[in-house]
Image (cartoon, rainbow, N blue to C red):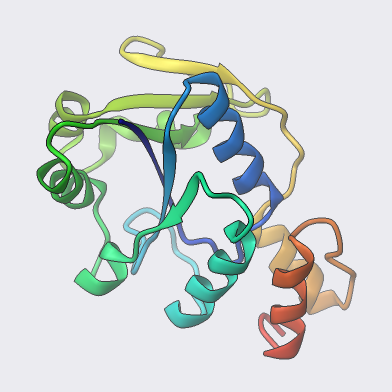
Length: 186
């Protein structure tokens, strides 16, 4: 099988994540995309809400797509979440499958600073979703895909919530309802 890996804080998950996953799934004929929420991100300095909320919102966001699945391996592992640890775990668990690590071009430009990046390159295919606002500096070894850039980010959503603005259409309705019901990001 061909399996995608989409990691992130998903704080909160939004339509950009879903569009990215669906685009890569279709363009590369993947069987499934694994959404893997980080426990503690090594390269971001952001306050995360409790992982139970992030997992529940992600579950609501992807529940109607049978090709999307959540893996909580990084949260269960605890500590700082390094992609190399997750890649090793998945390639050991699914030794006969091909993996495609999905990155935005902003992350791809930092990829060579990641812990174990050389081993990651040996174990999985690196798929880069090109964004016009983050030109890709190096293309060698990457599978590149043009995606629609909609400009929605988790930090923008958190900021809008704090300001009292509507996030309708930035996240699936069930995710928005969950955020409101649980008073998140206020």
